[in-house]
Image 1 (tube, rainbow, N blue to C red):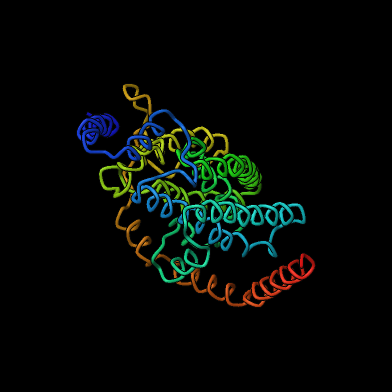
Image 2 (tube, one colour; image 1 turned 30 degrees about the vertical axis):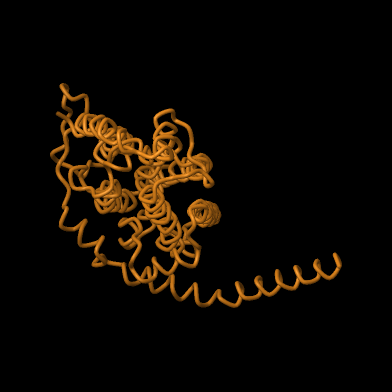
Length: 334
């Protein structure tokens, strides 16, 4: 029995056993979930559902913001004015995605300052891929192609997530991520079809970023602490392993078009499954990076803390302006 079938069977058993003890609020909540109705901020929801959403959405927001760093490092070193303008626009988009997601999380009763504190103190996680360094321009292309490509695979299904603000935010984010993925692949194609040195650079970037990109989908479903409940509540619509398989399958042809060697020497088409069989990941590396021991974990957080502190005067100025504006409006109203 597959993980998805086990999850479905467990879900049916849970519904039967819980239906006798659920409160009217819980029953109405599950009715909406099963009917594909969106849960909105003012609707009743289980506390565990709210906490699960805060964890996932804030982690997603942190990933967008921290993800600006490895690419932003190359804005002044882009090989042409066109590449520089495209990369600048892309990094700016990522900042916007972070803002959409922080705003969605705030509808669940957590403040922006709380989420930032959790990030900076290590209580909250972000995608492990951003703890790898960008050593060459080809790495920037690989991030656009592979990292944003993996994000799209995951985020397309999140457009149908059960929480309304998160779902609506993902619709716009996915449109922009599609552009990011295309520009990354176009940059990778230019390198792969360029000089021997450029092609070697592209191959090196593919070799280093392919495996971390697969790790973006998280641990195996059997080892995920949140997958079962997230699937039951339709926060997630597809499992980690199913999403990872989709990404593996779609990148095979893309690598062929680039004329590069696939990093997975054990990759083989499985006619019976209708998917590619692939090597297992280095899960020791995954957990090491998740737990703060990646190449750039400390650097990423230190940079975020420094930028946040340097921007404090801007936040103070905005707060003072808004207070002055409210006072003036109150005076005029009187």
